[in-house]
Length: 153
Image (cartoon, rainbow, N blue to C red; front, side, top):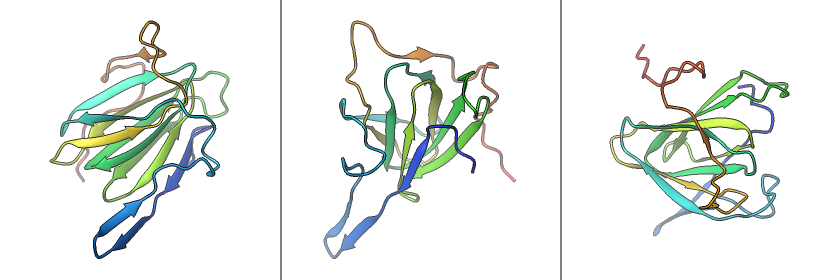
């Protein structure tokens, strides 16, 4: 897949033993790391879409830790060499992966497993309750050329 300019991904590795497994999600010595704001978890129910939004000040770093999510990015940055490009990732327990989303790139996700999907986000800035750095569009909008419905084939 041709990635949107500034998007970074990393396949994550489970380290199993007889007790279970360990999986590093994000490290300060990885090239994806730039700065730390906070860590939070967000839940999405099966079939639900949370989107669209972008940030002007922060990058997001997603890791799905339970269930499966379809994470979709749209580059609406007119000055970007990848303006108009869509990236679609299927991340979670069946595909442990880090997806880093740069400032200005719209993103959203859909729960695609039967159970609740949990995504950990490690943004580069803390949430500002007085002036949130979030710019939203409805999940189903004609301003972004993407259809969230499942396409069976």
